[in-house]
Image (cartoon, rainbow over all chains, first blue to last red; front, side, top):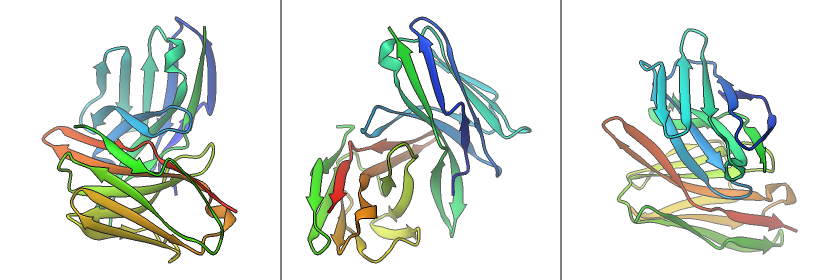
Amino acid sequence: SQQGEEDPQALSIQEGENATMNCSYKTSINNLQWYRQNSGRGLVHLILIRSNEREKHSGRLRVTLDTSKKSSSLLITASRAADTASYFCATDLYQGGSEKLVFGKGTKLTVNP
Amino acid sequence: DTEVTQTPKHLVMGMTNKKSLKCEQHMGHRAMYWYKQKAKKPPELMFVYSYEKLSINESVPSRFSPECPNSSLLNLHLHALQPEDSALYLCASRFRQDLSDTQYFGPGTRLTVL
């Protein structure tokens, strides 16, 4: 079952605008990651934020984490048509002595030229 | 080489066929994963291999049989699949060191079961 839930499920914006996606999760985490997936392709790791971090930046990406609310947000600034993709948050979950990633439902972002 | 490769890219098979999906990475990662992804859904974990040993099996039906022949290769053997098994099958390897923790995904195999 998914641990993370993103909202919105779909987001359509114009090039140059900012895009914000949110993720909520249920159990305590060590870290939260964001991945991007172009249509029908593999996922690409974007950024990881640890449970003791509140904010992290990478280029045009800004991620925040609020462990008290069990939520995270991904902000893409000055969006481009090439940012069109699905974005997933993923949290680590320990199970049977092993660790796995559990993905949220994802936000489908469309950036219109 | 920071790439995970998967073959074939597309596969169409009948319900009585036996086929295999292949995944390869040469980054020295010792954890490898199989995921299944249906359209407009997130990836769902199927299997995890750690140091060539199966460490997680997410109650996957036995018609899916994973194999890890060595630290660079991961196979998924398919037999007697059902049409509902049609999906994108993704392989990933994991790198974890110090503050980094990243899964590297292959491009996937698009499987259609007729």
